Image 1 (cartoon, rainbow, N blue to C red):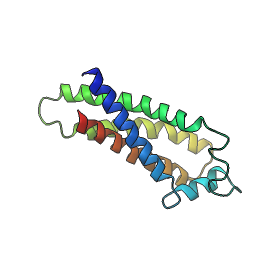
Image 2: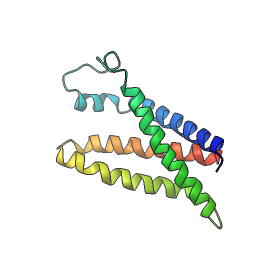
Image 3: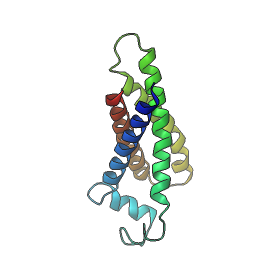
Image 4: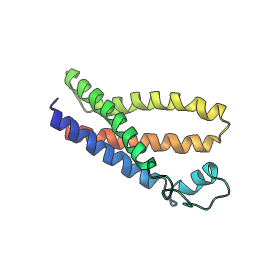
Amino acid sequence: MGSQLFVLQVIAATFASVCVGVLWYTPMLFGRYWWSIQFPGRKFGDGIGSNNTTLPFLSAASYLLQNSAIVVLMNWMLQAATQSTTLVPLLVAVVTLTVNASANFPHYLYGRQPLRLYAIYCGHDVVQLIAATMVAYVLA
């Protein structure tokens, strides 16, 4: 895999991930419910961003790391595929989601957080990982 193509795939997949996250946590989707659980008693959007300027950069760094792994795995699977490669993005998304969901579930279970909150996080992960994987696949 060429290094320029790899960087392009990772950056484009990260951009797709960030866009999904921004839309997912808007008030018209799941933002208000998520906010009410995470910050009880605070008005939606109150205080976020004004005091914590590192949070968006940490999220982007996390997405860059995750999408680098996705691109490496997908490109390796595309090279190893002997016939049809159309299922490769699906397989990459399933593998990543399985690892992600199984790693996160105990935190919600033992943290006694509502199952709806876990569903919001996992739903975000599903949509975000599919978007990132498909963008990287199209550029492959």
